[in-house]
Length: 311
Image 1: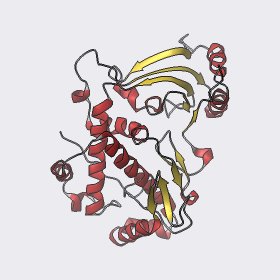
Image 2: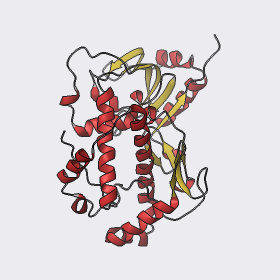
Image 3: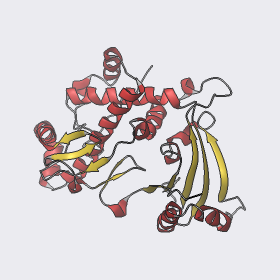
Image 4: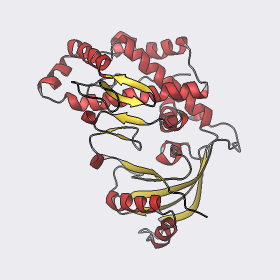
């Protein structure tokens, strides 16, 4: 399998753990983040930051411009993702060989060359290559077998979407009301529906969306198209991972990049949905983006478990 190893710039992100400065952790003093029982320690992160500052002139410029917080937030994201990938791989019994990791690194030009102008060094570049391969294998295991059923409607913007999603989470009967009251699109197309069903084998691109990354009984709100202000609110009523594909497996036709993104979307669920705590210095965890956001007001979406009503 050929995997294209992407290069991450200093601004674009990169090391498994990295944060500037110090501070009290979310649950343990000296932690940058906690994923379940796993701690991402500030000390280790600071050591990696020191390495980057020494090897990359651009990093020193960011330090002088007081912009390292931007890099730190993106890199703590990589740290949380790394731990989620490790936990998911253990639970799913998925692994990749050292030979496969070596091939991936060599295809990128070798760890030394490929890590130039990034926040990687040779060791962390190899670690990232392993993470990417694991994501691809996790996706291969499920991409032909998933199906989600959901009710949905479109909202005009994020404020309306989040407000109505919170109402649905508190009272699931609200969903039917909002679906019935949703307007039609400009071309008369439906902007709402109950009982929509999507299979990943038929629409692997859709498997990258938040709909496939949450358990049944979750309401989500997000922008399907980042270039549009319009958001979707969906209540996932059923989620299956044992659907038999009607035809041949589609995984061989999917690019490693797409499989990696599908794997990343699934990784929190496959890891057993561990609690993610982030040192507030670096922002808040955004489950929709699977990344850190600077603040609650800058989240890319909303997710909540729908309150169960008594029969």
